[in-house]
Image (cartoon, rainbow, N blue to C red; front, side, top):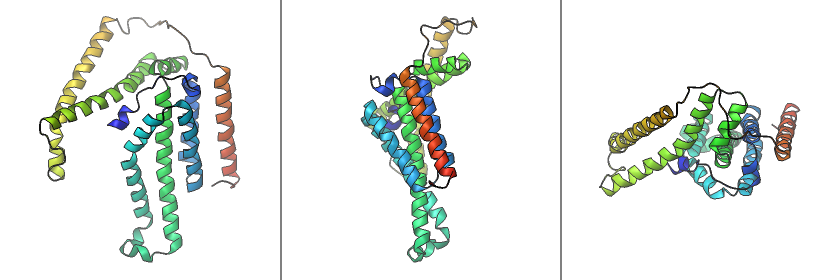
Amino acid sequence: MKAFEGLAYQRGVSFLHRLDPRSKMIYLIALSVLSTVVFYTLLPMLVLFISTIPLVALSRIVKKWLTIVRGALIFVIFIFLFNFIGLTWNYLPNILQAPPNVLCNALSLSTAMMLRFLTLVSVFALFFLTTSPDDFAQSMIQLKLPYDYALTFTMAMRFVPMLARETQLIIDAQKSRGLELEKGNFIQRIRNYIPILIPLIISSFKRAEMIADAMESRAFGASKQRTYLYMLKLSSHDFFFISLTLFFTCLAIVLRLLGLLL
């Protein structure tokens, strides 16, 4: 739950905080394409993951970023094991007797898949931690997306960390009343979460009703012509960041097509 809590926007004055959300969206899409479509081997994945770390340090969100990465470790381990077992399935009874090239290839590809997931986690964490939901909604509106969709996505950005925080509070409250979540077999452990899910669902419905009442009291949807307090404009820093992102993305794709970087 702490991983979802860490996705809450962190106010700051860093270079990345001041960038337009559209610039950061281009960076997010570029890195996602490179890590999921263009590359699949160990070295490029390692480079892509490491490339996000300087931006995390410059944005001064290292603590929250580490919280999110730690929360994703269970999935990282699962991805590594799933890929390694799949690649060495024929040698599982005597894994140590498998040919060295098979083991090296399995370890390399499994680690690459693990780094792919970590890269995606890192770049999405970087985006959400440095992008205000209001600015992001405004950027989507200026990209001609319907206001309803922009509002829905913005509300999700706001309430997912809030729900994660509320879930942790419910868990702590139930544990203080003697609830043992780790007690019993697998089925029993699932049943142990019922006293947590019911209050969370009720609380979620109450919050949704409050939001609906607030939107209705403000005559949401009554007028199709909306006005806005401010409009986002791309600055010279945004153009520099976009140019740098596109340059390195195109360079990486060219190197991949030429076979110089697999």
